[in-house]
Length: 270
Image (cartoon, rainbow, N blue to C red):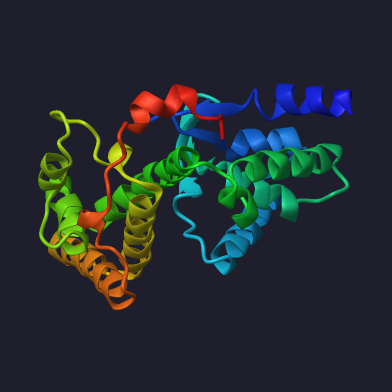
């Protein structure tokens, strides 16, 4: 068991990259070598199966399988080859669809399954968390979700991200912008409003983020106005749902006494 753990850490962790935003990723060409595939055409077929599995699980393919062209030397000349920047989830799907006769594939299945599981919580596990722990968990979901949302929004023509972001907040918060929300909460200049929300309020925003992402994926043309309007409509629809259910409007939910930024060091490591 120790040998497997050491192999995992020195192999799969050693080829992990961190981008400028602090997000981890793996390069498909490097993973191909580690898993024992000598030919790219065979490994690319595995990637295609993993992408199908990703789509069938109702997950967007682009955030997990980012196309990454590379320029490499071919003798005295150069050529461009296709590579992918893979998320941990993408790697998990790849090893699940890879040839199990390769020893590294079996080890990879264990490694990525365990590591991916650490990023998730079951409903029972979540219910046992304290309010601050729930806030931290959901805050991470909003952070990860926004990265995906803004990437898709950029692809759909969005350039004014302040306007795009505020459109979603206006729909959900009855016309309030991010600055309006910050002022109402009594926050300092440029203090993050999401760090100052309860788990319930963060949940509403997670729904706003994920539903907007899903609709933007279906948007055929790159049009900033359409994307911005979509964000507003999603926020408004969620607000209407909360109202119809008899729930508390987001702007009426209490603001936690301390920001997550202040509490983070005291909260359990999720």
